[in-house]
Image 1 (cartoon, one colour):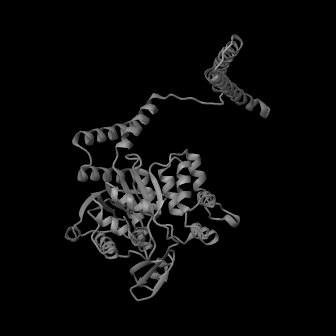
Image 2 (image 1 turned 60 degrees about the vertical axis):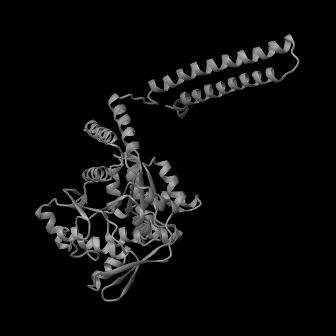
Image 3 (image 1 turned 120 degrees about the vertical axis):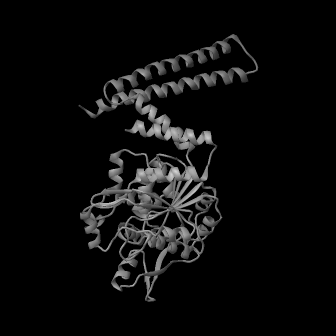
Length: 442
């Protein structure tokens, strides 16, 4: 089949649209001239009436013929129209649910944050993801060095987690080149880099990419400043660069004592601070404690906003310890590290995993010096933090991750119960919609 045969139905539709626009112009011109002319004659009246009637006739023809062309496109398979009542019902319930959802701010980075966002987007559209920009390794580090832009990797993952895209588009944006100068570089990173090139700043680039991918909620960098993450180890040595910190801690057999950022006067985005102040709930993590979660809290005004907000503040503890970062850490050690860096207790609830993993997988992680995070509930309670337990383990490609659906469910239930955002009637309606949507997805 020739290319023109594929294009002809679409060309006909455009032709009728243009004809309809011309008819509308005839009507407008005839009416305006008829109203504005002070002296009338039979000739002019006949001319303007003819012009208006002709315009109406042209519009009528364009609409009827245009509809026929569209129907022809559908019949030939160029367009597909599906009015699946079940899908339509799901869409209606989902939209009603999302707009009624709580205002949630999620702070962090890495795989953990994007995993949690994938679950939360089915409960509320009022999500703001505040993402670290301290990454300096991998493809993000290369783009940061070559183009002078902020690292796109964690931002990209969060955008993809909240996006409403087809599987093919997601696969495309997550694709990593295997050879050549772009080896190991993500197409999504390049997409965001291109957006950065045609935008006024990185924040605008993130907003544009989010719009293109129909993101639920908002994704934003914690700051537009070029951050460098540094760590002081217990032996007094200073390590520079987010990707170097765990490695140097292992090499020197010295755990992290404290982390800090350069420039120390880095300022948070105004929108990020406002989102925290207006939030119903703020969630920290899950993610690497020292390289994904805490760096955000060191940016100016973020810690202060967390102390002054009326939001429920939750911390999602990691399932496993991380070599070079949290070796031997318990839940209370994670919380203490956050409190020490912020200088104040900013957590109301901690979400912990009590699920178990099989012996084979546990042995694999032990070989890498990684263990299930343990908890002393009495110590956590003495810190003024309440514990919420659940089995959140999900195994993906042999790796332990949080189950996004289970985690999101317990977070929403906790937020709605503790904050009492709405009156009782609205809470009942919200959970009714939520359960109905779950049933329809099955």
